[in-house]
Image (cartoon, rainbow, N blue to C red; front, side):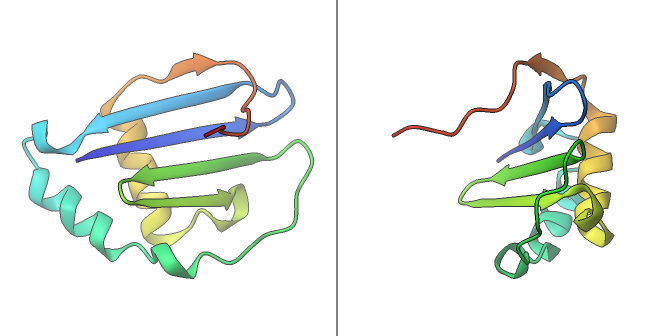
Length: 99
């Protein structure tokens, strides 16, 4: 299981991406419990906030997009844990996915 956190927005508009392979972590069970606690289906929409960060959190089959001010509780715990576990990859501005 992989957890991918993307942060976009801010003044520069750069996107940072952190990716963690949970199955390779020594504390895998703690990660799995945290991921299961997340309210994937209950993320309320938030109005756009210029120059603020937006976080996209992916853990197949789930995806959630949260405004910076929505990043609280278990969402904040997961993002902090992912950011502590790996270095970010810098990418250009976020672009919509095409299928």
